[in-house]
Figure 1 (cartoon, helix red, strand yellow):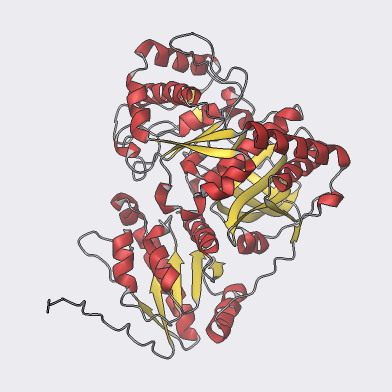
Figure 2: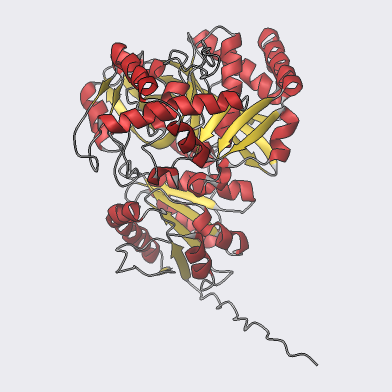
Length: 549
């Protein structure tokens, strides 16, 4: 009789009464974890103190790593190992003051049976709110029940009442009455017909989203399975970032110099230095110009209607950042790129929508926006932004909560009023070791439509609403930049009919898509046409806040 070696299965430790476990998902990049750790440590102490005042002990499930100089879960394997030590039925807090990779903890959260609470500090210093929203979107897609809270100092009634509810009942209820399902019958006839016609065209003619590797930064929520996309007429062309580097090598220096010259002639300024490690250099921009040309040519070769570049892992160690490239491609007015064989201008007279960080939900949204806005005769330039932070602002005729929407450089120049209002800064070294220029500016005042496509209950959904990008005094703009990432473009956004906490409670992603309309009336019409197209594509549409539908 053969002998077999059976695994030594250890029982999960029992949950102790009155004990809550705490985990902190971090970045995959050591430099980011080290720089951001002091803020995370301070935030955790405040959260622990709040629970202790309620008579609850918080036990950190993983220790500070003295060698790496941080206390984050920094890989998927580490996350799996940590969750082996956590009682399956124990109450669990995921505390985030930084950007985090959701897949570090997703495996453990999938099998956890106790109540889960995600918590973030209300601060723009590091993207903790962004990280928490990404985790929330990933949990939503995975069908994992969770509650969520946020606070400036964890002593306010909103937070304290929230944790009391969670301690008692294992859940926190939020006010999300601002969201309602779309009534297709209520859509204006002309815009409804346009949206349906564009959806029919997409399903018949089909579109290709070029994906330069997917799953960027552990964003499980940013991956849309083929089975959900294909019935709409949208298909993926799976491309490799190594092919992008190879394509850059085929671009001549003269071609790259022509792109740089085009930008200089239109008034874009670059803040140039000499230290490659910490400053923006001409060599970095030159490489980005080559990437721009290579990306357009690859997109054309595969017949892509939109593309997404992962950049963060792998490519960040090979070439400067992709964000300048993405900002250029999202703009209708951009440097011409020529086919090396036919010499024709590729994608002439139009934007090539790019979804930053290969966020495929945003890619679907950008593709739809491009078609609706173009059909309505408006500038189709669109971008995603991180939902970074925000504060109430009073003065200069403004008395409202003003969001800081901010992304690492992929916003189009038309959102700032043109290249003459844009400039390039070096990307932060802790995220971008080889640097590269941003495409930075302050988004111009105007009426916007915001939206987010996301996966929930095994289906595609879309939340949509109206907003206004406003101008703040330069002093306040600079203060907000210094409180976040001053290298990155920013939109001062006021969302119509939605409070801060309502938006945070409902939003299922770290990103939000925005596009300008020519007027408030046209914004309402564009929202209606876009909602109709989404609806006809089979996406479940929800309207949020004050919407004229």
